[in-house]
Image 1 (cartoon, rainbow, N blue to C red):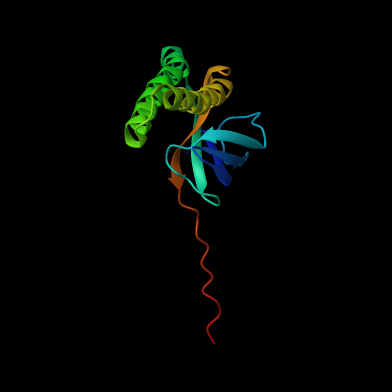
Image 2 (tube, rainbow, N blue to C red):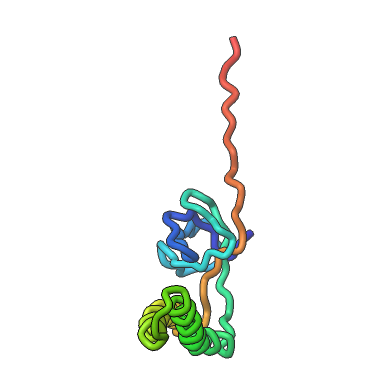
Length: 141
């Protein structure tokens, strides 16, 4: 049995909100709803197994600080490509693309830091479980 068993209420990108089944779960003192990472792609209505996993702080710092650097590099490449395509000076397209890519990557890194790094442990969905089927054969007469 999973440490945490519940029903996916809604999916939002790589995250899923899970309504915890406190009777079926091994852990006690769980909240009614958990916001979990969803690497298995569970959809709303799926019964899932989840567990708390420790988060590697070195990998987290690599993501938090590496994403903005990757955003700068992507902005330079995007701006250079646009300047070459439109036959214009490179400075303005590169500056605009760097700003846009930085906005996206810094926002993602901020959300990642808020959700994962602060807690040290993160609930992660690791399996989609089959619901028990109830078959009513009915009366034959």
